[in-house]
Image (tube, rainbow, N blue to C red; front, side, top):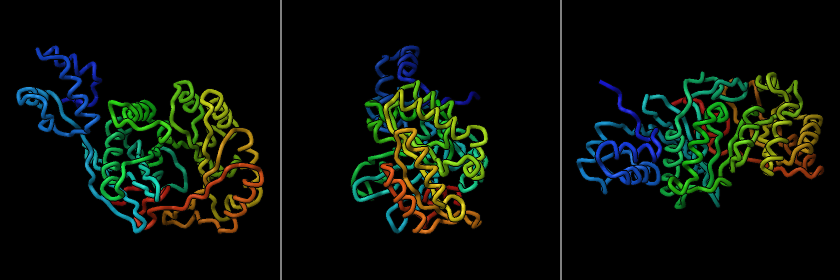
Length: 345
């Protein structure tokens, strides 16, 4: 018995061709495409403007490999963490982060991660596979429903900061974003989407060449090579100089500022010299800094810096006219905060 193909792997043109080849009207392909993406339908039976005969034909040829929210946890601060079951029973996690004015979906792009950032729980899981475009899309659909249900408004922002490195699943992530931003999909603005990466210079340049419209964030955590390499082994392959060159290329092409995600740890990068190095780096590329509170992942090797150290960073950056925001962690009580996604469920 031949394995049925996931219908969401087909383009609209391929769907139209399928109906023509099966002696039906090509515009049926448009109708099915709308059900699959704009209406995010997971069942052929729900496609009510198609005849029963047509729906049976689709059932014979295709499947819809949709995700399921296997477990949902709600934090005391309103954050929601989802354990998402994929069609092959693998699990990824996604998070809804609410504030007074907006809700943000933090979505995953891979099952596990192949990078070895020492401070990140996800890095302790081996990378199993890339997520397909529809699996990324489905996470956003699920979180949008939760946003409407629990916070009374539609999803406003998306960050690719969940499990995995988005730039190592480049094609599928960009395809998902195209669907999310398309009028034939969710119709979200590209300006409300941020892709976060550890910084892979070759792929950052490719983003710029592909003229993407979304925002770029880089997990920096130190502007001193030796310090960054201890935390993020990828820095040995692509050091800060190479990373900077790719970011300057990005800015020249897109004219959009970089956001540096930056965690301050006790006795690792909490000294004045670390803050000075960050200022020097920021001056070389139009950028802003998000200082993020660290969320412990059990072993105690990395510890949150003191409020004094955070204030020192803020003063140093502001004195040098670098825009800085201090991001307080959300969902820490359910292991949903930055760096804590580890499939404990």
